Amino acid sequence: MRYFPIFLDARHINALVVGGGEVAARKIELLLKTTKKISVMSAVINGSVERLIKENELNWVSHNYEIGHMESFSMVIAATDDESVNQDVQKEASELNLLVNVVDQPELCNYITPAIIDRDPMIVAISSSGSAPILVRMLREQIERIMPSAYGKLADFSFKFRDHVKARVKGVSNRRAFWENTLRGPIGEQLLSGQTKIAEQQLIASLKEEVPPAEGGITFIHTMTGNPDHLTLAAHRALQFADAVFYDNDVNPALLEYVRRDAEKYPQDISSSISINFQHAIELAESGLKIIYFLDGYEPLPHNQALTTSNITKQTFVCGS
Image (cartoon, rainbow, N blue to C red; front, side, top):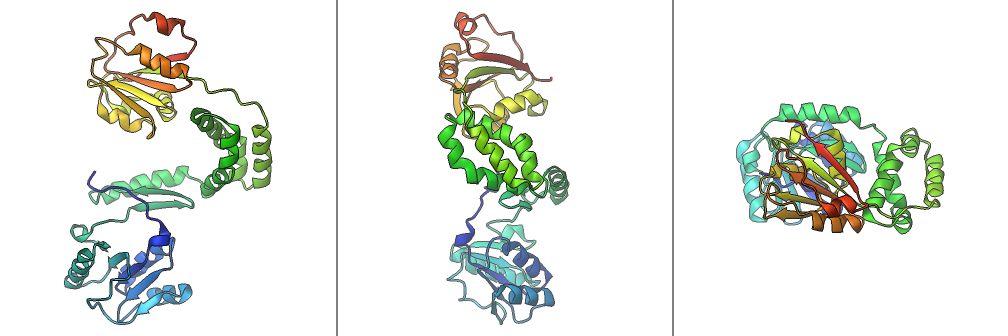
């Protein structure tokens, strides 16, 4: 990745916007979603910038860019229509090791702002690293359609009851399953429709029910040609619940990007066409973990007595070619 994706804590943002036109106004509006610690440096400001300053009590430094005013800031945005001024802003900010963005000049930026879908506190950020803004817009339109405006309520609800669920539902896998069933089911629907109290009552009632211990299992995924686009929906779902993943050097490493981020990874030095590490995978599954075992191409699994006699759940997916 050319750019490292990161979310900044708004409590530590103190921003300087250099410029007073429409471009500056757009940047100020974006910053205002997270902070009001914003200063605007420009001798002349248009109506939009003036309104934003007044309504949000922002600091207006009423002169054009001058060197020596950046020491107290953590972030600088150059939004003027003068390239030489933007270059001077970038030079000073870089010398002070500040985050600096020069609008429409990515070669002068040490960070760029992505396209944002805001369902506070849920935030989706999309970037093509500056290479395909049209593609970003197309993807944003697709995500906008599938994320209801009230989606943030699900996140607020999850945060409110997180500790209650953690105390009652033991095991990471069990909690993931509990939350998915909760948010995808009637409780989630009630939250999205504004019936928060009913949703809370139903969640509390569900926590009083007996929760079974975590049930481990192994999912073998034959990857055929290794194209991630050919993973089945069932395989995608299994990958999101994985506690650990096994794979050898023949498996396309791009497939690992689809596995849950904090799943343990067990690369195998011996090709699965020679030997499959059944024993280690079985032991982990018997301890209650959900295991993914990627297998390159497609060869029927060899008979294994330990796997056959184990009571763990076993399933096999064959992806398309």
